[in-house]
Amino acid sequence: MRTVTYCTNSTITEAWGVVLGLPGELDAEEVGALAYFGRKRYGPFERVPSVVLVQRPAVGPVPPFWQQQLTWDNGRLLARLGHRYLSVHFLQQGDSRYHTYETSLQPAIRGWLETYDETLLGPPEHYPLDRVGFGYVNTFHFPASGFDLSTYFRVSMGIGVQTADKGLLALETNFRLFDASRAADVIVNLSVNTGGEEGLQLQVQTKIVAERRSAEEGSLKDHASILAELVSAKEAAKAMFFDLATDETHRIMGAQYAAD
Image (cartoon, rainbow, N blue to C red; front, top):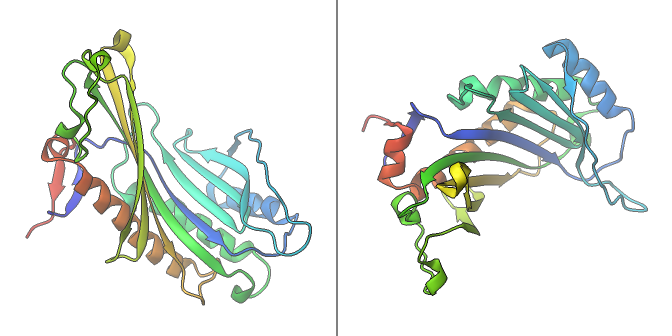
């Protein structure tokens, strides 16, 4: 498969990196401090109201969970902060498009990782890293009439019942694979649903998430190492998407390839 460097017609509606630590002692003041120092780095935030349900163990270390959602840059960027938890998201807003990881998301991820490093109390070994992940959501709209999913993605299915004659109204499938070359678990969700124009269009959406387990010595405070792990996870998710997509989808997206 040819390596895609970028797309001139990006269909990414959301992209994110997530960093999770191992369970640990809960510090009630930690998230407030992270938000404060993040505000000093990025400027004013808008806090997104949210309800998070956490099943906290009666005794022992607490697993990672997020507690606050903060947006900035007119809602284009969002961060979820929490106990041993960080995720940073790009969200498509209006005509804004995701260009490349290096320009659209990496600067925000780097800034928050540095904020965690500067804010968390104690040495790095107090914040062992569990895993990192990277995900993309790509959204497409196709005419419902004569729609064939295998034209756009390497997924084949057939429905041999009479009521399917007028076409597909909805579909959702999930599968999980292992990318041995990047040591990453890759989870794929593909959904098809009726869109606008009184059902004349279908919305096809792919959600691909790649996760890499950290080495035993990894730490939430080691932002340089985490950035490298995130790049590996991103490449695993990206490779899966473009391998799953057909040449026609590559064409629609304006895929540009690395020189051989």
